[in-house]
Image (cartoon, rainbow, N blue to C red; front, side, top):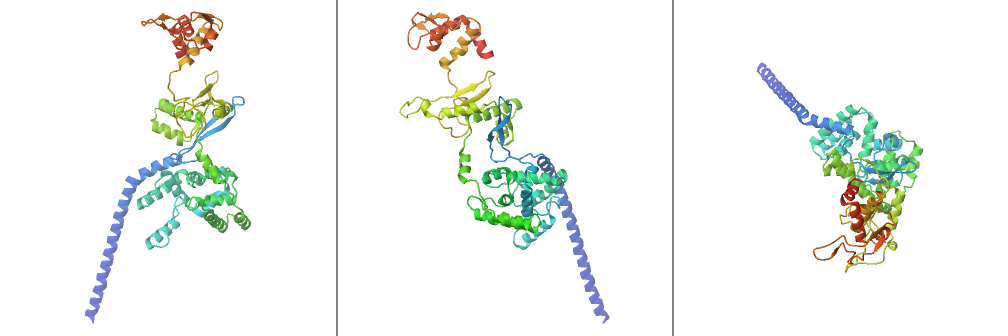
Length: 483
């Protein structure tokens, strides 16, 4: 009997030692894993987190539209002339411009404990991990802060490493900013809502034709639902899906005490009226004006010359850097110029060559200070963006148009001639071939005298050369290059 007890005691002792050994091995493994994880966090994650958080806290990394403003010469008031859209059509909005209903709708459906957690909703994360491990229905555990980081960094792969990085970034961002409204504002400016709408401001204008601050509860619930999957929740092609999602969000807002039953029912019953799809298409097909093309080119060149930027960086700043560009354009003059150049009836009714091409034209209008007030680069309706402009890109000989600038203007300015001064239509010299130089459009000089104004009107070469000889080529050159 005693022997049996000793055997039983020995078995218990053996299993106790085995259990203790396994426990110690587990603790050691956990310690080693913990140390390795801490090393990984310190060496690989923390530097990236600090850099990302520094950029996110300053709003760096967002693609923003740039804007060209005109200044009214009489009142000095500035107004928006053109929006330069980059790859992401985004116009930033401040949190105080966003309706409370939109903020509540987003929080209700995306992150209902947003104002309670510190960047990571551990309860939601645990539920998501459990579903993933046990193979249940997949659910998201990302908070608004985590989604902001994913949207801003474009880091959206499905690896565990990315998720761990995202968690650390979220915790660090919340600690650095310590401002929930600022995080929500950044999120509302980064989310993609379909049809190249990045942020709620551009989406409100695209779908409803109004500023985001003017949206009602029903419209706010629509926008809050689009970011889940813009291809499925498409107001133009799948309005019934959008309505289902909107009602789900309104139900969530009611359950969470954000809206009353009356507000809930009224919003559900309201008919959703979207801006016509044809209007959206027409806007996408709109090309920049000739003036805008010229401004874009000038700003890119100035950034390269004055800031030392490469062409690629300069272009990126113009198209996605959120620049405010103040132009010299006079919109009234530009509108008139655009209308004239799109009217074929004001041009000669003629064609050239076997292809039947029409004579082209361009015009630049400046004020007395040399500021460009309006320009067009060609006839007809402008199509395309940043194409060839005869006003800014053509590199051709000026021909007789140089005479008033290089000869007659300087000669009058220096008092050498007046419009009625008589100058003789004669050659300046005889060439080695025995022919007089210059000729007048194939005609030999007549030798007769004529007033300067007649020489200008007839573009007589000999008159211009005679006046240039009186002025001297050096004086003409000085006027062209310095004055």
